[in-house]
Length: 331
Image 1: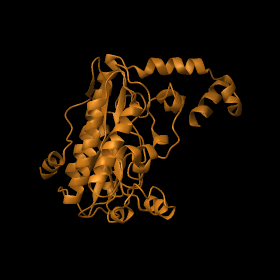
Image 2: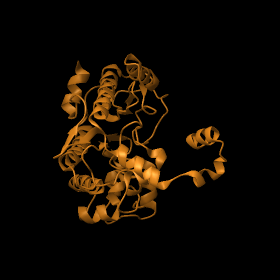
Image 3: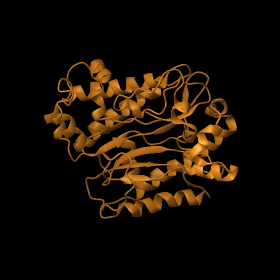
Image 4: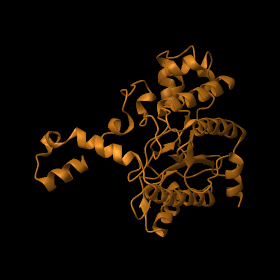
């Protein structure tokens, strides 16, 4: 809406007739051009990713029980100013990780809390980074946190293993969802056949969003040109719960820069609603799931570029495994 008003004013158009002046062919041509990043662009994105990494490490070293969330956010966002940049989107730093886009920072951080930090830097040239980590306030994952976090990283590594030129990102999302379903069946939170559960959408009670999105001059690159035009091309968006939030479902090509971001959440309101409606009783062990109320949520996100024969994670090495994060927090 802001862009429509800005362009309408500049071009002296009636904003309510804005669509009469747009060219779908031009939009598609721009998307086709910008979806494939040049080497110079990849270098700039990598700079933004490395600033983003420093934001995450700063948070891990700053956080402690008794602080307010906004005190840690101040330290995180100061990192961008150090490089004459800014944040690429509103920082998400929360102990209530089951609330997916939580921009409130007024909670007091307590021992035992799990933090989700989803943040990014926009560098001086305007290119964006976007990464997410999940870490315990006290620097030590509990056994339950380790267990769920390990499953989360299994999901992430499944995507890492699959992304390459020629694969459709929707297929990657579904394969990652199957890893989640199999993991939840093993832990007694789900039951039945993993493939059938994913096809039905039962796993989305734990993973209600898409696996990733394009990244570039915007954190969800070009979404103002139309999210479906950027992320889809050969088939329409699937409106099943969870899948309808998948922003990227294209065949991946060399030069595409995008994120991989699986998540696992225990959302009491969603679980209660589905249980009351009798949804997916054949796949979900609601009694067991309810034991995780209060756990919150976790997600992990990295930024990737498709290469000629595979993919590469952008930026300097990020901590991924729980022991790596614990080591940083110990220091």
